[in-house]
Length: 223
Ligand code: ADP
Ligand code: ADP
Image (cartoon, rainbow, N blue to C red):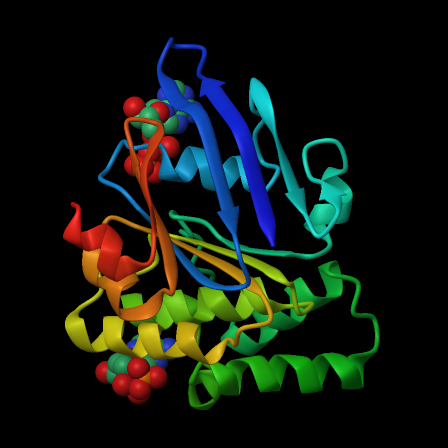
């Protein structure tokens, strides 16, 4: 469970991106819905310990996230909104390098982990292809594979389906559903169907504030 309490953030340019955000997020797929500019990425970056809040606390499984960022980072997988590096090395080699950076020293263990992840995201047959040649949907699935390295129990995916065609989006949805119920998975999106099709719980963010929270049927009836 992830608890967010009183998170507030004003950027140097005076934009108040988050205003007293309070949400409790259970295990499973949680949808954070909001239009562009609502503050979704600001909140995701704050949870991922990539930027600091002005006030508030975040706790994950007893970890005080904002004061113990390294504890959180060890358990975090993050697919940022602009996962925009598409190297010319192969999918396999890129994941293998990232696994080394994650501390997986043993080559045989890495091989098993990397092949397993590539199979899970349906890219095993493309393992020897350059990531730079992948379609948008393939890149997002590859992004999930990299975020899952080290088996995180908090996974943040920020606007993962923007720009995907319906078939790719569907595949990506199936992948998210396959990740199981034992992690906290936060899906940030401006697409109502992403949350209504996938999430048991959700919140709506607008102009930096939580407007609604509950199950998608209740919440989308009130939109
Ligand atoms: P969303 O992800 O919902 O589109 P963001 O968190 O990206 O929302 O943005 C919320 C508001 O904060 C917007 O007005 C945006 O322009 C502003 N903002 C986001 N990041 C920064 C930043 N680094 N510096 C200044 N303003 C920012
Ligand atoms: P998947 O079924 O995993 O989505 P597909 O086999 O349908 O992937 O491939 C999607 C498209 O991308 C196909 O046209 C395929 O030929 C092309 N493709 C796959 N890998 C590469 C690559 N490394 N470079 C360029 N195109 C690729």
